[in-house]
Amino acid sequence: MAGAATTPCALIVMGVSGSGKSTIGERLAERLGWPFEDGDRFHPASNVAKMSAGHALTDEDRWPWLQAIADEIDRLCEAGERAVIACSALKRAYREVLVHGRDDVRIVYLDGTQDLIAARLAARKGHFMPPALLVSQFKTLEKPAPNENPVTVSIDAPVETIVDDIVRQLGLGPRRNRP
Image (tube, rainbow, N blue to C red; front, top):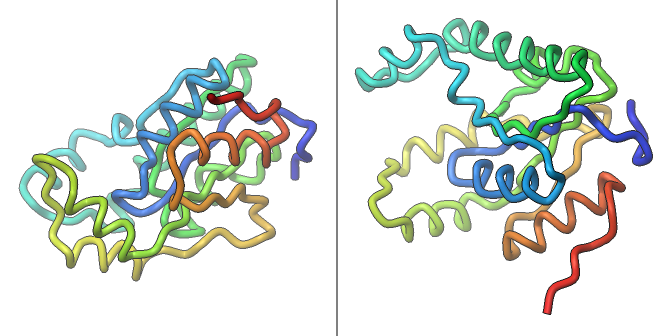
């Protein structure tokens, strides 16, 4: 796996719904000067239709979506480009599709308790997530193992502190000065 001195071509920001994948991913991409991609935009039309009808996706539904993200990562890396991609990637099997043995792709795991994330979701204006869905996300979650070489950060901190921690763990630059 890549060492801290090797700059990855892609960072996959993962975690359960409400962990801050988009917020942290966008801020991290901005800090690094890289593009940000929301993994949801890679869903095939059939998945979008299924979710719009209120049906949960199965693993079989997810494989083409995960492969589309993996193909985009391969394209970026081969073109010498970089990106931060938000994707739940809750299961190790999903991450294996995304990374597929590459040492220039890193997983950034946003780690938070179910209570913390539930409280944040409850505080969102105009956001509705049934508690059962968050519970099922945590039941599905397989935290990245050490041999996946993840960057694990606690989300129980301000956004800039979380981004500072990610950048520090990746060895991609000094901590940003804040007043």
